[in-house]
Image 1 (spheres, rainbow, N blue to C red):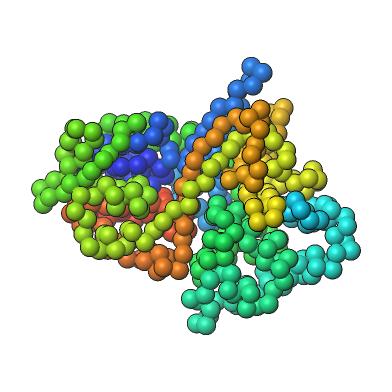
Image 2: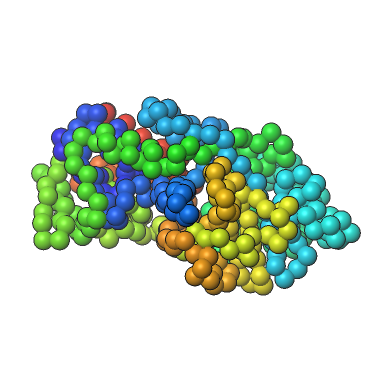
Length: 408
């Protein structure tokens, strides 16, 4: 059997890797690198090269079991990371992190701020009671509506919970408020994020994510193509035809490991079911800047964390402190900011890239189970992080489930 895999993110890489053990598999990628969000960039300054990951960075052993097994099979080394979180509201006195009392009261004036102290109490009580919140009355609600109905303070909603959700899913505050409550509670519970102590240890790939990408592409049974733009996929009872420019390539099966909307657009004559389901999944585009501008970090160094929600007025962004996240051996502090709230001076910018993340809402999360009903129709298969919470583990899990169907 000859199989084409379209897209080389974690879903495409893993499905191509596992199926290569039995079949001839060709992998197609439209960009100039394999890996999708597993994107490593080399910072070169003063004769020194510092590799950093700009997309996929962290994982843990509790909620990424398939990824852990995948890395162990590939013999990919990884090391401990840090998942501290900070909030900095530039036009107010709100600035804190979760790293001990020194971080919580990074701005010492908040020791005497009644609303801030109330927020801390609400965090403790909300986290302790979170497992009781999902019931028949609340399961169809959005996160924003639920928080308002619970009469939680503005400080808790706007300066803690929504910034954290926005940071995790790389989305604006308004989109974070629209997240299905059931989806939010499930993710936070499974990932131990409601725990006030004994949270899961997080890890990062020792030599950056391109380590595992290279190990996978070296083991693919067929050919691998980058800078190859697939423009159309036509299907018949006998085969699948992939169109690239003016060239056609024929396969027995095709796996679409691209975004849901991209996959739908590639299909010539999609079925009504394919159109109805795939069209419901949309994506948020984020501009990511690798830079050295400390203005996009908390003002007070003691509040600096791995993840930093930075706001000014209605504008907000997320800055990752890469030195802390990836244990960089570097002389400078390097940051990755998604959708910066102000223009970064050219002197500070090292690299700019765009990433798209699934926007999961009440409508499309209900359709996730129906995605499996599309598998195998007209020799076509689908996988991607949109099958789950939108993360690396979800993309890998979807490909493993797909691969297992080939064995039956």
